[in-house]
Image 1 (spheres, rainbow, N blue to C red):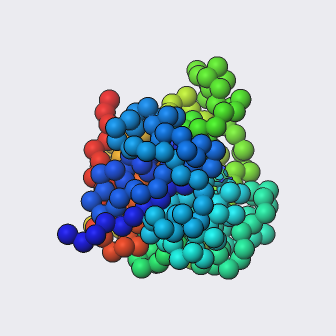
Image 2: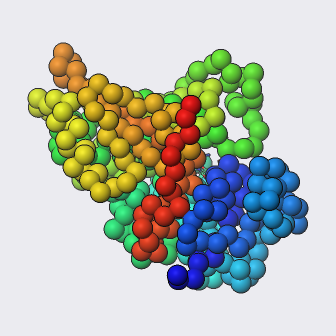
Length: 349
Ligand SMILES: NC(=O)c1ccc[n+]([C@@H]2O[C@H](COP(=O)([O-])OP(=O)(O)OC[C@H]3O[C@@H](n4cnc5c(N)ncnc54)[C@H](OP(=O)(O)O)[C@@H]3O)[C@@H](O)[C@H]2O)c1
């Protein structure tokens, strides 16, 4: 068997980082050789996460490019937007392969990034170099690349649900509405009033309506995949659950189509792709059906009365929406089986 590739995880004390540690542990071609923390270097890995006791041992490494270069071949940057743009160029310049989970390299325009993220954009030469790693759509670009920008959680669910219909010309792109709901782990581990138990429990609320930073990412990738300039209405909501995203998406049909037409179109589009599952007629996916797994499940309803299609897609935000897709991208970069380390049966109930 070929030698395993050595991986470092930066931001390992965050939710994305810790799910990477979970997934990489059972990856047949990867060994995690450096678990990195900017705030807790020198402390036991399992200190903040007792569930990792006896699974990952040793202490956390600091963010030190020379050390990472000695210990690893690939770096997963599970760091916040604004931090990745500072860290990732140094990793790339040191010759490391990088998969970045933040939003810092997804948009190709620095000005657009600044407008939506209200932060200084990364240097343009790195923006241009990053491959947008929506595996099922742009996977050919990921193969052999050394720098992947992992898609956002909402964009992953929305784009996998929308691209086949928009590309086929079956829906009017001007009419797309994405009504999205996410569990609170989407906001990461750091504390804030929004995710305070008594603020979110038994509550259900919209946030950043028409101003969420994933809006231009969805529009950019839809245009790249379909050629259509697609202004989307995107409303994210927070739901009092830990993991999961459900996108309910509406669009007007350009011509008569049935649910079975959609099912056939999507099954053909995602043929051979192990992580997208298309539901049969009248069966709509739920977040729990993908919990802890790398699946994106998609279902449809066509309303003959309003001539609209409703497309529903679900993912686990931390797996297909973050760590799982990052591992899937590594698999594509390295030319391995796309499913390596990701054959996870959803946890149910
Ligand atoms: N949560 C999701 O569902 C999700 C989905 C898709 C994408 N993402 C993206 O993935 C990234 C990580 O998300 P998350 O949910 O894991 O966030 P998180 O729980 O807040 O963790 C981020 C970690 O990054 C590290 N960090 C913070 N500032 C840093 C800096 N200046 N330099 C180096 N490390 C720093 C921190 O760990 P240390 O203090 O140990 O260094 C922190 O625990 C974010 O960019 C997020 O937008 C998240």
